[in-house]
Length: 512
Image 1 (cartoon, rainbow, N blue to C red):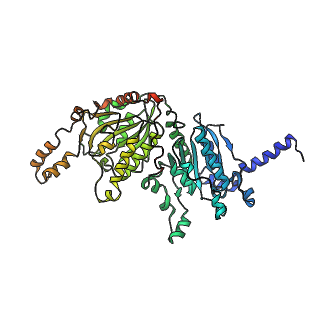
Image 2 (cartoon, one colour):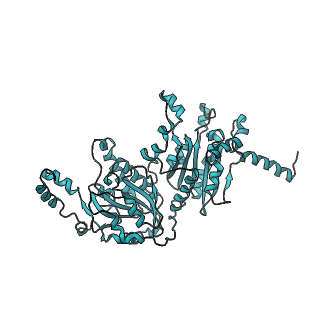
Image 3 (spheres, rainbow, N blue to C red):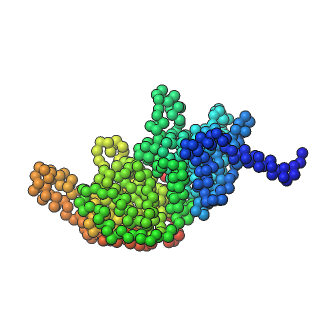
């Protein structure tokens, strides 16, 4: 029977209403009561108003018995604009069979990945899933219908970002860990498998927070870049992260207007850094003065706190920062800090973001535990990555800079522009430690002999001494730090390629 236009409109409206209903009013109400956004609400928070265009609204499970109970097959996918720039999104709808993945929903997700790669814009994942859908995936036919799980991990050509909500197992975890930026809402759990399955496999009761809660992934594994309290904060963090990045690796990062009063605190910057090399301070306070006002976006703040990594703007330009933080472990660099640094090098080089090293470190952490954590291999891994970075690198030495870490933190000609504060000290080893090793005395055992030895070991360690052999390009007044960085970013801009690097690190392992 042929339908007229109005009848077709009515049929379409009913089908759309059914698809938009997701898991039904009861499940949606429970989420609202728990203060959690549903998949479509997360999409609405992400994209500029009125710009989202959904693809796959009428997709359902290919299992006949599940067709009517799987609206959009548990994944909301489509494109929209974030601050005017295009992006695609995959929002797992937990109200539909726990957002479990089937061949159809996998096809939808793969389309978003391919579209973002081909057209050159980011893809955003709102991860929340029980994993693969069973029994769909069981047996040879189920496994044989899986899409290419390797192809989507190759390269960093367009940014991937993810938010972890609720239970995130299977592909929801893979997407989060493979992303350039991942934000984790407290109360969520990210793991390879559910606590129930892990308990069955290990024959012991497993606590979900201990398995994969925010403390685990924020502070111990470092697999997530930020931890927040609410869904809305997670979505806002994604929007902000993307504001520092280009839409793809073939364009330069966006520039922003420099807020008034940016750099106003530079005149007093020395007050943030104690003169004594053994006295601690928080490097993040120094960074806040150097960067454009309110532009510091710290990454992995709970992980390896002795090294601060952040995206900032300086003179309106996106810059990636790797900075020692003496507030934690005296700024000594351990194995976790090495991983954190490499993660930042890879992301910045992949997306044409210049790097800034702020240096105040006593060397790499030594000891039995450090060796067991493969510190030697981690140091070389960092050096390997640093040697492949092709974006501009700027180094500023603030106070002390000792040992092999001098190289890893942008010394020994590994950076394009290098300056030292006039108060900085550079040597193979802390002169105090060197005195004890060479002369076999301590301040307590023989104060006078120690002082004589220290005077000798500290000879030739000033900023002017390293400048005399062109080990640094400039010795600067601390108050001039911001100006030095802005000028260096201009001078070393990749003018021949319009700010585009060679992306030699884009195939670096996704995780560390």
